[in-house]
Amino acid sequence: MLDQIAHRGPDGEGSVTVADSWLGHRRLAIVDVQGGDQPIAAAQGGAAMVGNGEIYNHAELRARLGDAGAFTTRSDNEIALQLFLAEGTPALRTLKGMFALAVAHEDGRFVAVRDPLGIKPLYWARRDATTLFASELKAFPTDWRDAVEVFPPGHAWTPEEGLVALFGAPADGLAPSSPVATDTDGPSEEAFAAIRDTLIQAVDRRLMGDVPVGVFLSGGLDSSLIAAIAARRAAANGRRVSSFAVGLEGSDDIVAARAIAQHLDTDHHEMIYTAEDLLAALPATIQCIESFDPMLVHSAVPNYLLAEFTGKHVKVVLTGEGADELYAGYTHYRDFEEADALHTELVRSVRGLHNLNLQRCDRTTMAHSLEARVPFLDLDVIDLAFSLPTTWKQPRPDRPEKWLLRTAFAGWLPEQYLWRTKEQFGDGTGASTVLRNAAELECSVQTYEELRESIDPPLRTREEAVYWQLFHEHLEGVPVGETVGRFSVA
Image (cartoon, rainbow, N blue to C red; front, side, top):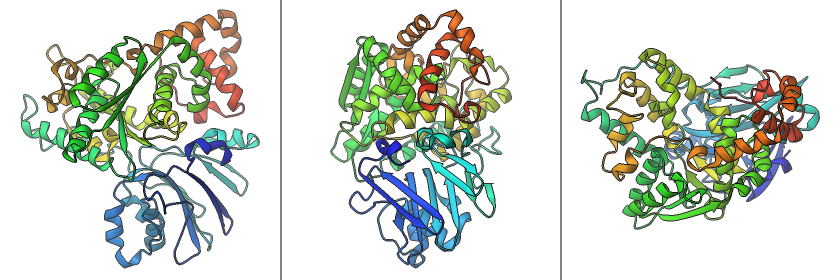
């Protein structure tokens, strides 16, 4: 199983048996590079843990534990082990970050936990008295694949209590009414300041680590704002942040990213690919993202090439994931004329990210031993966004999509890019058209009709049938309905 996910951690490999549990880990060294190898064993013996991701409030939690924690590393992940030993599973609710982790104790106790949004992946399979966990579908032995399911975000599992919700669902109980929403005609300056300051704090948290942190810069609003914040932070410390972009020669995204990088004075790196490069990367990308949804594939192929390119320079990168779901950035959100209906759809979209955009984000980067961090999906950013009146997010003739976000960051980017029209990443890079046309040429109508009912729910287009065949070659036997997210098609 560890061999199948070697790409996720080229810096170290370890395993340990604790009572009737076996823990294995592949390490991408980011915090405590020299001393943070995993599994991490408790100083007093008898327990160990493995973890994937970053816990951003680990220093605060270490201070809270004080003498109750006997730490052996500076690793952020070790705080989960010490909290479990000192206070039990409920204490893991205090973790803030992106993580999937497991702790085992010699007395038979065991817990597996996944972060509230499912930013970091986790799957599991149960059969008789055995339960397996892994970060990717491909890690499970072939004869276990029919039992694999997505481990639900925000949950914990113990042998004694089974699966329980450890964290509240994102935006749970939040209605769109906020103390900063004092102006009935529109947002106050206090509201714009809160949007701006909360995102800046989220970026600051995600600059944590002992290795340089870069930024994906697509040229769109979301990644450009993250780059602008990171660039200011780097400049304050006498440095330049590294930014990375890919696209077809002359594509909208590559041109915009180049101009924004120049404006922000980033150390900019770009890769120009060809249509042939996109098609050559398609099979590896589908194997990597473990999905065949066309919309996901369109953005995943350029993301795969971008991550491969970026991974040669840095180990950590910030991305703009999540802004569209928080601030109604996608065109289809215009179909929701009632504010309450739009709010419900935005909340649903955020909660569904774990097996769609976040899956693509994690897999394409970790395929190249690169960790992606997502500031817009900081829980404080989410809570603020969903507490704001939804009417402020609804586009109208004088307010384009994400008007709130654009206005909050007035002056941070050149006007033409601050107000640039939204494009899907696959469209802006020129990838969508290339991939769609090639797939439809490869799959005839007759072949599509023969394949259509191969899965439940059925395949929806000839393009999806091509991608499903590539998926099926590597992951035959996986229950698609239990594991693969698919965007709705109007």
